[in-house]
Image (cartoon, rainbow, N blue to C red; front, top):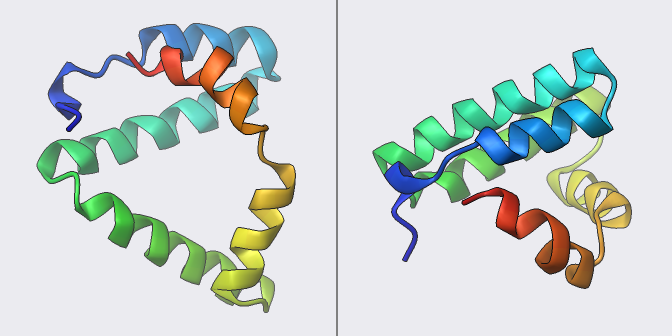
Length: 91
């Protein structure tokens, strides 16, 4: 089980700022900060947060939560890339 109070976003912030346009990097970092705050309240809330976010995006786009998830799935990094590069950034 992850102790969300021990998770630091410093390394991730550096990666985002070096690999994304400045405005996009700051928006992504802000989103991580908000979700980490939720996780620190109760890690189980992450599932609810994800479902609520997908529902709001679906409403805004005239889609469905499944459509939102499928679109994100197609754009997501491969499992090996996640394990080799990104997972360690959330330490």
